[in-house]
Length: 332
Image (cartoon, rainbow, N blue to C red; front, side):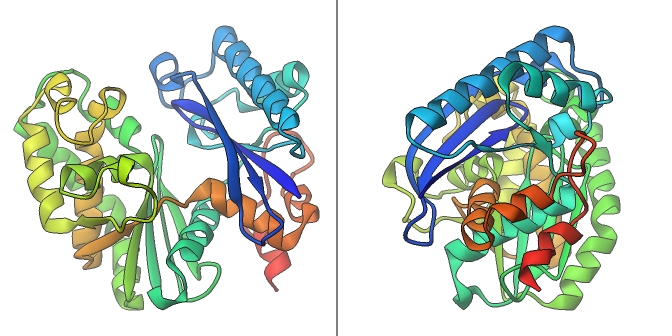
């Protein structure tokens, strides 16, 4: 069986085609379309006609690519960039009409649960009670669990791009006051969640997302060219030093640092502030960086629970997906 997943994020539309006969998603082809929606649509603002058209065209191209590789129609979903748009329903209709693909917006808590599943499968049961941190452009997902799916999952409006837009609007080094204010905001937003995580007492921590991967590289982790199976760790002490270093630099200068790409250099500081603050409040000193996350979690649920699981997520109004209760149907 060959299946595919399509992830619409704030920067790219990503397609993964995978063989599933072994019980695990083994990628055979990946592709991406760089839309950089974050440059065209500010957080919380509606998508214009051009952005809707380009998104629909990218989704249509991805669907054709999946078909050419012999895969079933892609499990297509969008994260916070579309989920938080005031004209979300209009965007989804445009994609359905132009591309012939049902694009779903996943609730943040559901994103956290699926990402947890992907990371759990990557780390294995030896990780024990596990806390997950997943940092996107629009939101931060946190989950904790002892089993296959988390016992606790939450989504917070602490995405790296969102916070950069709100607190660090320029390309130069931000004022020290702005960094301090952001740290205070993140502490306030994370206070209750962090208290729950400390009470649960995780044995291991895992970080996912491209932003955390780049910050781990900046703090000394192996570069991506060494492959997926090289262990990589995000160290809290190293992340604090990286945060302070990034705060002194412009976006252009950050892009010259190891691991920091030019497109993400602007939001790297906000990512470091969120990551370090979360780890400190939760009592986490190190977090394993997992290459498996949300897309792999979606593929795993499709493999393990069949097509009906994905169908059950649809709310019937074309505007998104059900609450996390739908995710748990197949696991009870």
